[in-house]
Every structure is written in C-alpha cells, then in structure tokens.
Image: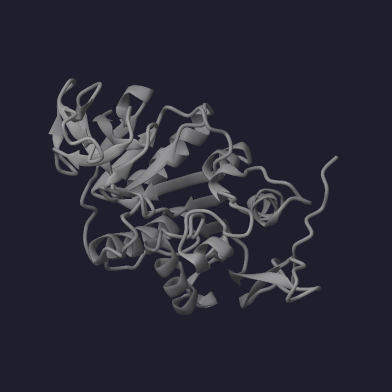
Length: 334
C-alpha cells in the first residue's frame, strides 16, 4: 500500500504565477520537538503546457547545480514560460547545508534512496516525496550533479538508458539540445536507486550530468550549465526560443559508459599518485596511477591499470585511497 508523504507545504502546484516557499519535513529533535526541515522549492506557472522539474543538491557537496538553480529561481518570471517549472535547488538540504555528499542526520545518500520511504528517515522521506509527488507532475526532469568532493570530472551532460526505446530516443534528443561540449550515455545501468532511474520508471524525459567536481565551483562549468539548462527549457517547449539565438549549437562529442571495465578501482590502501591527466586519451593496459605505502616506504607501489581504451572523464580528487575506491573511469565514443 502506498503511504502518503509526511512532508507538507503551502505550495499550490496548480496555481498560476510564481511561488517560492518550502517543503516541510517533520523532524523532532531535542532543540525542536515539533520542528521541520525546510527544503526550498519554487514553482513558476503560466497557463497550460509541459512541466519541467529541475533539481540540484542531490549531493550536498556538488555546487554548480545549486548555484544555477538558485539564480534561475530569481530570474524566471511567469511571462518567460508556457507551462510549469518546478525547481528544487537543494534537494537533500541537510547534506547541502553541511557541504557533504550524504546527510549528516541519517548518513543518507539521496541518489541511492529511491523510491524512498514515506515514513523513513529524512533522506528516504525526501526521495519518497520526489518520487510520489513531484515526478508524477512532470514531463521532463534534470538532476544536476558535479562529482562531489572526492571526484573530478570533465564536465558533461548525460542521459541514462532505460530500456524503453521511445523514452531513450526522447532523452537522447534532449541531451543533444542541451549542447554540452561532451555528452555521455550511461548504458551500463545496474543501479535502480538513482533519481534518474526513478524518473525513467515514471516515464519522464530525464537528463543528468557531472558539471565539475573536487568540491569547488568551476566558472566555465557554471556558465556551460546555466546555458544548457535554458537550452533544455527551450527543448521542452516550456520556454520559447529567443528570436535571435545568441550562438549556434556547438555540437557535442557523444560518448558512453557501457561496462564495469570503464572503471579503475584501488586494490590497496595508500596514497594515490595519478599518472595521467583528466581528459587524456588512454589505451587498454595504460597506467592510471600508483598507490604508495608511506608507512612502509621500502615496499614497491601498487600500479592501477586501465582495462580498456577511452577518455579519462573522471579521476579521484583525494590523495588517500582505500581498497575499493574508484581511482578513475573512462568513457568511449558511441
């Protein structure tokens, strides 16, 4: 039986105009017996048309998307659109306020919590509200990521194959319309707990992406993301294209991650010395990095090798690794 969400709000999703308010998630603690976590949300509606749901702060230490959507909330007015735009700029608010990947309250990773739990701890309750309330309102969805503190990425927009041909075709068209220099297709998809996987189950045309990383804010990534989100709004039909486009589409390099062999994992704990640059083209068997053992400096370092050829689109940002940490991963041309 589907339980109703305990999250409440003064937002009227059917009202015309612009509303900026909060989702209130009951959270009873020592300092506030009847308190609630106030998660910001904006709804802009003008007449009938498609609904686009934009979210960031799924991971709290990924900042470009949070900044982009905060700006968009301030800038968008109802006259700009035909339809409805729902914006959740800090979806896992406790994580966002802590600048952390997971919530400090329940150690929950929102992007591993779908479809959520109506009566669960905060992270799972947020996932449940998104999945059961916001997704059914939407036609289009974009979940903005940036690699987080532990990873660095070549910025890209992405879509995840759902196995539904028509939906994947529509998401691919949206990916091309976003017009990032690099576009990535996640063709290897064993994980069903992701926001994007949940959106696909709801039949939404859905995009993702990694627009930076390392726990900072990259100006070039931010500019690309801000323009790309507007391109996505134009594509959806919720926002009219400007009569005179600022610039023609640049075109995108389309790549994919289609197997576990795209990833390199640490086999030992130690200090990681990367030996290739982010964005480099490598061949199967090339060295990705060396793990050094400073507590036993006479021991030879442990090599980490790429298991196939491709572009290095991701590298670990932290110097210290534990066995099982992702050292790097590749993408290959489609």
